[in-house]
Image (cartoon, rainbow, N blue to C red):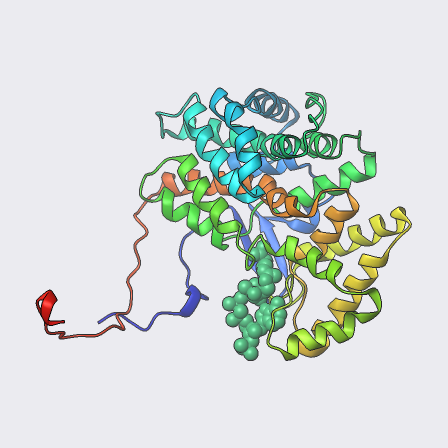
Length: 373
Ligand code: ACO
């Protein structure tokens, strides 16, 4: 008989990884041994993606080569191009990304190979294409063509340019780049686990990423950042404490709070709170930041819960001019670097992921012919 399952696999070590590590009690996060506090604001997203996918922070030469690969890799294939308009009309953003990445598999020059070299090239292409897919989807649904991506600009700068239609200022680029760094990888979170389960059948990179996107979409995972903004927008500024208390009393969860692993402040939230405050002050209207602070205080008072990465990311993206329903797609733009690295890592030392289950159904049932049931 199987052992009793741990609901939600809490505390179950499901894989070995050299990519990231969390100390949930101390509130610390490391990418390949580097403290997130040392990377955030000092290392670009491109350097971080290289760190995850190739294993090292790049030298200038390596970064130039990787940057060139990203620029070349962001060109969308014919099948993706042809389908963006209809997908933009019929699918919500995360559904659209799930479909478009699946279509991109057919356009990928390495589509018939699962070799480590091909997967590194696919990792760079997927990382380069994800922000373009979001921008092109948004352009198609709004009927406003996105400005061409500029090969001289970073992924962060290009994304803001293409989404807002304006050349972003240096501070906005710095903030958004830091957001991408902060979201790049996070041990065995649900979407990464989904990607690894898929990859462990020796399925291909794009299939694993489609599984991850479908998993990130849910409001208990990446979908929470959008819900945080919707919650803030639904509350009158003077009603934060009363509304949050009423929601908690009714047994509702407050999106953007709580975490399976962190028992203290999520180190990513520390950076996001600060960036949210800076952007709020610069915008001249800090209402949502003040509401967020109040919400944080009330949730801690009532439940002892800390904000997670999604909580202050919401107001940061809002102040950067990103539409609310693109918040979770933005998460995927960053996490693509980690997901792809996990697929590569899984393939490098693979064993099928196939846990057991505890059977709780009927036993010894007596079969009856259909007319006797
Ligand atoms: N608001 C209110 N209560 C909460 C919250 C919350 N956000 N989070 C946890 N709790 C309470 C639960 O109701 C539960 O209380 P109980 O024991 O009295 O029933 C207790 O804390 C434990 O919560 P679980 O949901 O069992 O914790 P779990 O580890 O399974 O879930 C999760 C973690 C999903 C993040 C949870 O905290 C949650 O639903 N948060 C809101 C959604 C969210 O912000 N998700 C993003 C997470 S970060 C990321 O994925 C990128």
